[in-house]
Amino acid sequence: MVLAVIGGGALAAAVALELAAGDPAGTGWVLVGPGPFYAVGLVLAFRGPGQRAGAWLLGTGAAFLLSVCLGDAVLPLVAGSPSAWLVVLAREWASFACFVAAVGLIGLFPAGVPQRRAERWVLWAGRGDGRADTGAGDGGQSHRPPRLRP
Image (cartoon, rainbow, N blue to C red; front, side):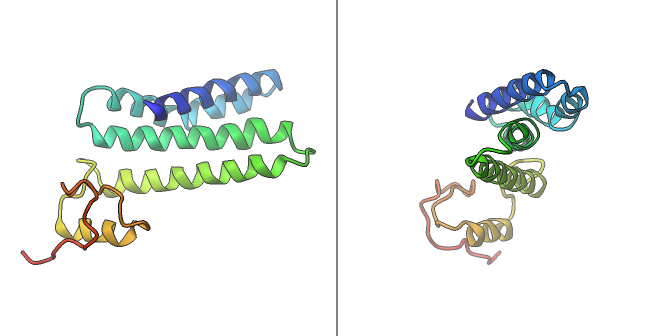
């Protein structure tokens, strides 16, 4: 739900700001670039419970929309401001979130969760805080890597 609100707000803000700036090409980019990722992810994520691939796609689309909104629509408005670096920083965070969500979408497709022990081990090794839920069924409580024995 949070990703849907973030993506929808970023979409509305980007389209409004691009139209107000008189940039129809920018508006078109927002609608045909990140827009389809968000729209399809929104439909799949709310289609029914257990649509984890849809949630990954929604995360990718929402972060992509936020990155485009901040970089293409908001940044030109605050370019001469001393606080423009905050917009750039937020855009970079959104871009990184988009990258992480896209890797999750591609790496865990079609189920949206790790299917093999080796995938769970790689996710365990890559999670920085040792508490993120990998879908392994332990709720992220285990601080040991899963066993690789058959």
